[in-house]
Length: 364
Image (cartoon, rainbow, N blue to C red; front, side):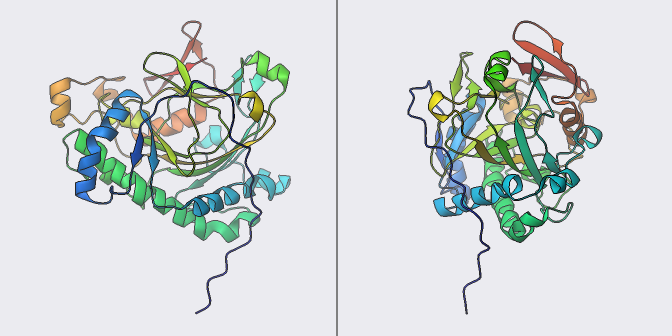
């Protein structure tokens, strides 16, 4: 039989890796080659759970995709930003504030970052079903089967084993979190393509070189496919901001608020931000590929008190159990509010807003 034809896509050429000496975060590197078996997950449990209790961030390698397959996804990720005409972009722009959903394009300069400076970030967000709940611009349509396969790989080959490991760490049945994240269940998990563009020197000075303020993510788990433009920084346990280093064909994985709520604070939603890249990468755009995981919409974000671990170590809550929002309520509230609503200044660093009774902090 003839080999299937691969749809042509222009190759995206990223910036060279920085040569500057930066203070890198010392994140654990997790080999996921054995995560598909119960024995392999048992061996990884201590390492993964320690990472999620301390940094809340880690790298995953040997996740099942080759470098060439990952490069192909980055080529496809550039299509919405380079191959879609402006008028078509507008037709597919998400009503983020009105619906609390990111499906479609998020244009540049929608969000206020600081001191009147607006963002220079474009996004294209696809519901993980790809074709089930939204239509797509013409230029992207030939690649929808590949996007669907990529979403399934992230969800079933990476997310599910990770959720099983996190359940093990709480001494809960392995399927505890998996049942809250069915691929075909109602939730708003996104495959996100995201492009940061350089800013003016005036905007850099006004915003103190911060492109996105320090924050925690909305959902349970975020999967970021490593790319070479250094900009992501995490707030380490000692309070210092450190850079996340690029590793070829690796994932950078972190815990979000929803998992912190469900785990009673056992797993940490780590504060992270996006900073202007180092000098030798300034002037380049920064293309990212993400899988933002949201639990099923009806999941109530309160601690799993049946966990023997939580019964031993105690529970840390950000909201009382009887007032805990559902995943849908929290996701819609935070999505609609981010960069589009006023924040209350708590001190010189922290700004805060309430989302369904939950205090959400931003770090300037």
